[in-house]
Length: 104
Image 1 (cartoon, rainbow, N blue to C red):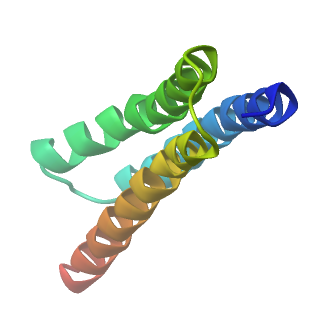
Image 2: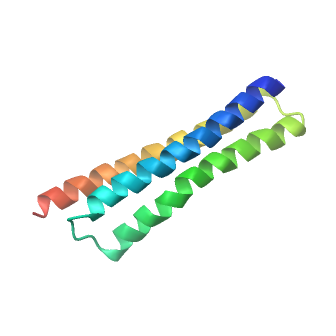
């Protein structure tokens, strides 16, 4: 594992964490405003606001840990974990939008 790629990937993950925080804040705020959502839906959206950036930080820390422990280049696959979490959030959010539109 190259230190340069590890550093660049870690910086990228921290930038992605900020972007995902803003994505969730604005998307969740947009759907909550003007729609009646249940407690569970609001709690999932609230949790996503902190969970998605947290997954980015966790993946960056995992790659740094693997780098310090002499991991292989396969350790870079940890950087894909936030992409999977974002895909899950977008699928949930899209389903929530469809559900609220059909409820009107």
